[in-house]
Image (cartoon, rainbow over all chains, first blue to last red):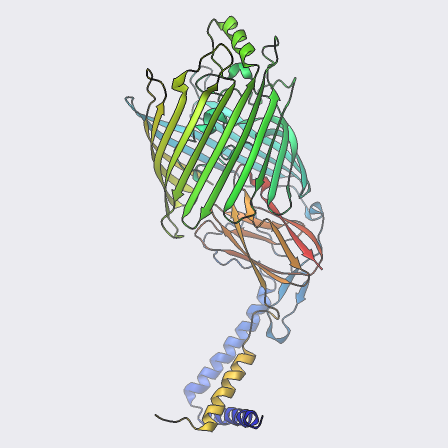
Amino acid sequence: MRSATTVATFAFLGILCLTADRAAAQTPEQRRIDELERRVRDLESQLRELLASAPPKVSDTSDTVTEDAAEPDVSDVSDTSAGGQQPVPSLGPPRAADETAAVSRTGPISGYMDFHLNKPEHEDPVWDFHRFVLLFNHSFTDRIRFVGELELEHAFVSGLESSGEVELEQAYLDFKVKPQFNLRAGMLLAPVGIINERHEPPAFYGVERPFVDTFIIPTTWFDAGAGVHGTIGSGWQYRGYLMAPLDTTKITAEEGLHEATQKGFVSNVRNVALTGRLENVTVPGLTLGASFWRGRSGFNFRQAESSVGVLEFDGRYRAGPFGARGEFAHVFVGGAAELNDFLQRSTGVSPNIASQMRGFYLEPSIRPLPRLRQDLAAFVRYENFDTQYRMPAGLLPLTQFDRAAWIFGGSYYPDPDVVLKVDYSIVRNRSSLFRSIDSFNVGLGWWF
Amino acid sequence: MRRIPPARAGALVGAVLLVMLTSPSGFSQEPRVIRVTAERFAFTPSHITVRRGTIVELRLRSEDTNHGFHIAGSEFNAIIPKRGRGDATLIFRADNVGHYTFECSKMCGAGHIIMRGTLTVEE
């Protein structure tokens, strides 16, 4: 106890000595330093006052977009600067979203583009401006919003076959009710698989979309519909829609469901399809999803009912520079035997439509560079997709459509929204007569 | 070895203590730092719970493009820089008990509107 008192006494005396010593020994330089310190303190206090009315701090503003940013609510500043403390704006009481909506507002146009060079084996190379997509959004209030996505495929549209397409892939109104329950209606994206709702070119590896997301899941899969969506619990998202059904008469042996969507073109809804997706993002870096589609689809041939069901599971994981994606999709075509019989009698040729189709892929990847302004990625994807997986009685599978593919490639990102892609695709099938075609592809994609 | 006089030693200890005790901190209360990752089309974590009175410092980072972080019904809104371009930080005091929705406020792709989460302030 005594020694502690002695130390404290020495400390106090020491401080006094140092202070007195310093005052006595003040030189012109020291006085100048003191004056500068005083000015810095003045500036500091002025800065604090300014911060009280400034937008929230953004640590790196070099690439910050500010058009949507609003001022923070600092009208209720509960922690004042008394005692030299920095003021903290208070988050006001929870309010209904539309209480703050003063006027309607239209967001800036966004979009993405996909420009490809494709060189199939033994064929001439082609330049293809594959996709030119513009997205529009408008908020009528904070509760009611519009989103539209208009796509031009292959750059040129005419009334003839083998031309491009103009597609209205999304055009819906979204009614925000509460986090767990919201409504939307219009032209919707089917919530099936990884790519259908995440198809911006920088968001996936490879010049072309995966084969599974082309033939088994017909991306971009959109149609008229209405439904609900929301977030529940910790990290769960769901979507459930009623949508126009697929047209089973457009299913083919080679391309599966690729051409079977009605695309909102006076879509027949004698029977609507039910589709939904559940997604979990609880674990950092890991996204797991499952989706389904089920709908009667025989409106173009009424002699017997046919239907399409899709079950899909997918996952994405990222840990440091490593990443991986996987997807599995299984398609069930109900009434396939009657459907084949009807189409054969109509056209004279059996379409050989399968009663089940199946596909899956696994795609490990690496981004070897740390977080720099420019980025590199390398990936390999193995895909297995069979559009003749199970056949109805009396039909044999065409084995050239039981395929597997290895895609090796890389992506260079001069900006996170701009990507240069290169890949080589090796496709094999089980037929001894037909050989699948490999291809070399280069792509330039961007999002804004 | 040169020995430090007791008075000088006491003075040094006292000065160090004084500096430590009067060292200015940014806030009267240490903020609770919560790191949130944004990636098409989800925030992780998407559900955040804090106690009333907590000073919350949200450090927002994107794994792809620009995103926004807007707390619905308030004016709190930050634009999250693209991947590799730093973090955005939002600081506020959670004074009121209740449920808030936060959402992406910068068009980020086809699924932009589903990019939402909840902030719960509890007693």
